[in-house]
Length: 361
Image 1 (cartoon, rainbow, N blue to C red):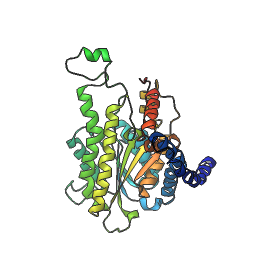
Image 2 (cartoon, helix red, strand yellow; image 1 turned 60 degrees about the vertical axis):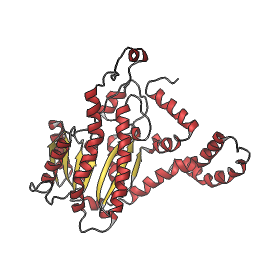
Image 3 (cartoon, helix red, strand yellow; image 1 turned 90 degrees about the vertical axis):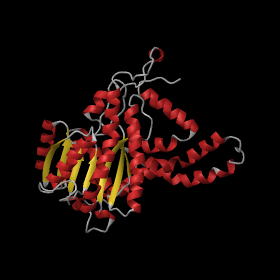
Image 4 (cartoon, one colour; image 1 turned 120 degrees about the horizontal axis):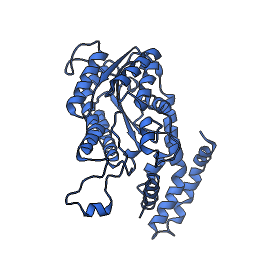
């Protein structure tokens, strides 16, 4: 842990003890109260999440992954490709789903070279419930020796939901253009069809796949009673699922929806005693080809590496973590915790708007 974080953590009790005496003096100044609480809690905010993630990584047992059946969606490049390689090195059976057949076959070949027990390329489009179902059925058959069907006893140990459709651009036209429209239409590169596709792929397909795969995941965990041996759903989300993201409004809306759905599904699984853990991964800026091409003219910040992100995702998921913020250096865990405070909400939103190439009022 960085020395600065250790100092901040050590000073937290002193700061917390010092704040209450001043509350009486500030009884009419709610914002000042909030600021004092924030300053006192900052050391904890900066250290608790990274410490929890460090613990999760330490409790990861690679030997448990060998031979498991893993389905990775969005595996033809970027983070999904690197997740496939992580599981390959651990000796898992992997089914890799994406739309780009040639790239997908190349990833499957590399996964086999890296040590995957087997690697299967499944071409699929998550733009509809039927497409999601077809991809799931083909993957389950491949991972279980080629037989059975979705409603027959096929098993799955890990479902990684990583696929996405992204566009970068303002959803709203300029104010002058809006005044001239009778019925509003999104600005380019958006269209009504593009909106439906973005929500369908980035949100609805995750819901469909999680629900449809649940019986196979339960079968994958049969005979195991410990949480460490449970089946896994790994949801690759984004800082856009915790914070506003202009120029990616639809993407951000879908990612926010993922958190609401999977946080609720996790509680349902707990109530029903379903042996499936759900890990939601909140990723910051990652240096994938897609991210670089979309944001190169606006975002000028250091990006995390896909291989490192994939390693953190796999370790956290198999340690049973509920949520991962990565990389911690981008402080998404801090920003998402602070934004509900009114003053800081305004400040953080101005920073976000500036980083997206926009201007605040």
